[in-house]
Length: 143
Image (cartoon, rainbow, N blue to C red):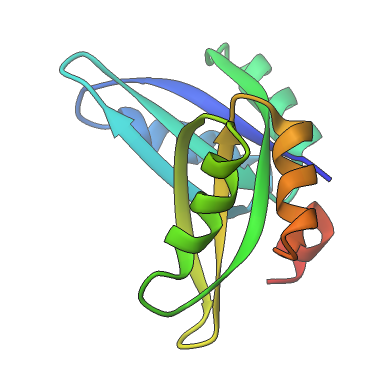
């Protein structure tokens, strides 16, 4: 049930992020989720898109450095501690969380957390065993 996330290396300079987002928009690729982490010289843009194949093709054509990774998307209660409860399941299973980002789907009800784990299949198994709902790529496209 892992979903695909595209990580794009973006130079930390004026207009660089907009240029990458323009590659997506010019090729009809819509963003479903996005986060960016930066350092002094570059950033890593992480996106979930509505058409991963088209996004990769467009990035290749534009010669933009990127990679595609498996991540896990889960439903977390949109209450204080909702995400912490999900992360505890992963930590209790002995799996490292490399990073996470989240967005609210329905305020006060539930959110979607994107998790990059050291062991995706084991993480999915632990989450399912704990009754944490996994979100599929199809689910994300319907949000």
